[in-house]
Length: 173
Image (cartoon, rainbow, N blue to C red; front, top):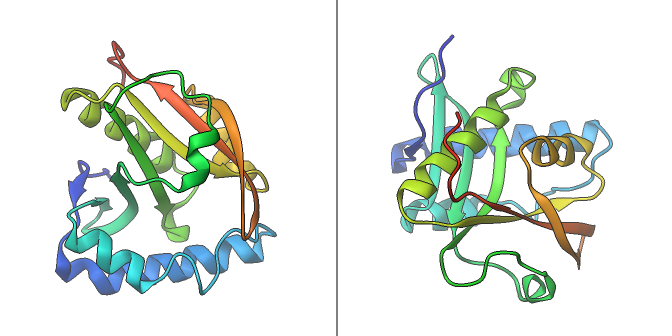
């Protein structure tokens, strides 16, 4: 089945988005990756992202296959990163989630490439994110896509890598 383009999520997507967050949280915990729980991410995060127009989705067969939040918000711990691209032309990836029902099909990779193309077209020079050091799947994804570790942060769930990719001049999908 074909993956749709990356598009802003709509308020009517809320229930499906919350179900994906819940199932992804359960899946991570069952896989031994204690990254998410009932505290984070939660319905308030989804609602805020929807209200602010910062939540994007891709669909397969009419259903949401993946979701991601894009903005410039970052925790104070991001200040410790040795960011490679200076200036305000960056965006932060938060809560990249592929529905457990369709994982293993390259959706995360395709979503990140769509994000890079969209942001580069909007004048963004780099993408920043944090990745849980105990999540081997996300670490492999970001390394494969060329994201570099530029620091570390310690949050409630443990140690996270601060990562960045300079997206100027790339044209691949």
